[in-house]
Length: 214
Image (cartoon, rainbow, N blue to C red; front, side):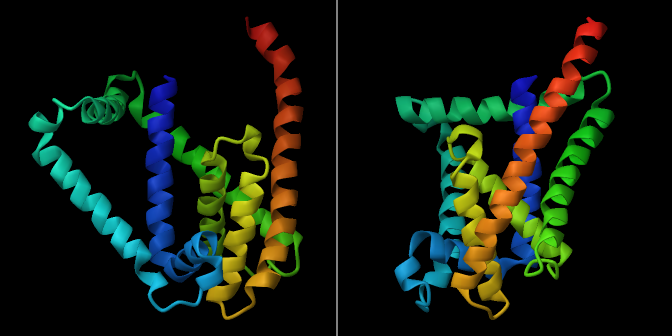
C-alpha cells in the first residue's frame, strides 16, 4: 500500500512538473540557474542545462531498456532494473484494487488540495497576492522538490527551495531576485508553519475518532 501510494505521488508530481514546464518554463529555468550556479545566473549558456539533462535522461532510458539483458549481468544495473520493475508493478497493482477509480480520484484530489494550499498562502502577502494560478503550480512543484530532500519535515530544505523559487518567479517577471528571495522566505515560513500546525491539530483530533472506530 505504501509503495503504491508513493508511485501515485510520483506520477502526480511528474504531471505537475510537466504542467509547470509548459506554463512557467522561464521560472523553472531561472530557479535551477540560481540554485546551481548563483554566481553565473546571467550566463547565456546556462539556460540550456534543462535540455541537456532531459536529453541525457531520455537517451539513458532508451539505452537501459535496449541493452537490458546485458546490463542485468552487472550488479548495479540489476538493482536499478529491480527498482524500475518494482515501480511498474506498483502502478499495475492499481488495477487489482477493489475500487481503482475511486483510489485515483482521491489521490488526484489530495494533490489538488496540495496545490490550493500552496496557492492560497500567496494571498497572505501583498507582494505575492497578484500571483496567477500558474505561479501557484510552480510553487507547489518547487516546494515538493524541497520536501524530497531527506530533512526532518522538510525544515530548511523547503524554505530554501521556496526562497529560490519565488526569487526565480520575480526574475521571470522582470523583477529582482534578491527581493523575490526575501518574499519567498517569508512565504515559506508562513506556509510550512501552517502545515505543521494543521498536521498537529488534526492528528490530535483524529486520535479519539480512531480509538472509537477500533
